[in-house]
Length: 602
Image 1: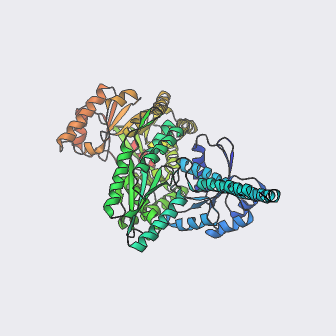
Image 2: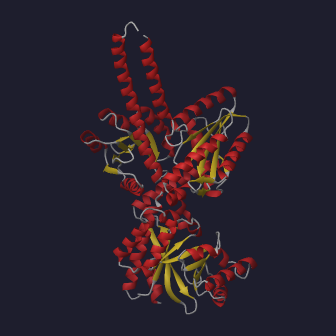
């Protein structure tokens, strides 16, 4: 199946969601597929009846039919097609469970899917459907053979016993395949839910507690993208082994998602037991993994929910543990966190905001504002930074920090980032043609954008499309991206630099600042973080750090830019110590394009 072209039908009425699925599939390495998209159930049924289809991605929220009726109607008309149902949010997971019981192979939740999970789910759906078909065929064949052998061997039922034993062994093998993860051999989501249901029933009868631990690997995607899926898969197998070593008698571990594992602790004496197991799991995963000569670090964030405090059924407990895990990832990676109702409310609010964000992208509600970058020696505006704003009707534009993390986690940062880069280049070219040929522009770049396939080709295409020279573009990257130290990172940065694109390390001083990576990578400038600039003259350590960064940059022949300059005293200090470039409210806030051009003319 890995080499054959997989024929996929997507029934989805939202063009934005359909395009997101298409982009994810385009990014999958080594995944050969043919995607057909229709936006209604009727056309989907016609396609399935006319053409062979390996797997179906079905949105349960279609205008002409919704919920389980959509799935039931389709399976009545076109039975036997491996089906993945697509939910609008986590609150619909109870419908998904019923959908799986009604004939779907698995389900996905919009906004909680990345490329690796999508591809694995598609392959799993096909494999599980094939396993069920194989079981039916095996039953039919064995029944036929039993009848034939019974007639032939009427005086010998010894042979019949052998046939029955063979049949049972085949059934056991297929049943195991249907209930276990193909990569790690751990129980899959269905078997986990069954075990958790039994644990809850036992706890209810005995007034006991059950703990559910969601364990999400930190930065696994970076390992997968930089070293390849083969090493990523091997790491997932080794993680499964280490987690099994942490289990007590009666505990079980399953693999729920691409890099998510779930522990079920049914015999819980108290909350302390859950904390002990969680810490043992963290300690086990903090040890270095040696995979094909690579030393890897796979720390994890763990979310914990408890029965009956955090939920009375399987879905509620898993949702609570997932919420707690996401909170840990956002605020305190490498630790465990218990679920609270406050976390649940925050998760619901975040989901609502994510849905609004998705709609905003479809409605083109995002705009760019531009903050000038100034040569402090003569007051000249020579460049600007393009900053994203969300313009909602009847409200002031919302700045990036309030929603960019949602874009990162949902995967929407990829289409949004591409739009931002194209719009910034288009606007700059327009200004250059209007009489400002020397003006440049800076664009922030997230690690997820950088690691997307063909990122370099996308930059080249946008520059060609807009007619902007590469030397007019500056990309701001983070220290964490440079610290990956992979050959792919070096190669992409070198290719961009050779084109003429300038590379700036953003928020310098807040991460793991190091001369080593400044010498290895083609960095052109350092940007001093505003948290240090604001403390100039007030905080001795911050003032000394700013002075040291400027001196280091000058010694390495790097440009240095200070952001967040708000007072004349700060500007004078920076200029007197060798920093000539600045941006901040002292010069101008980030302003719309029409205001920026007026500022240029003044």
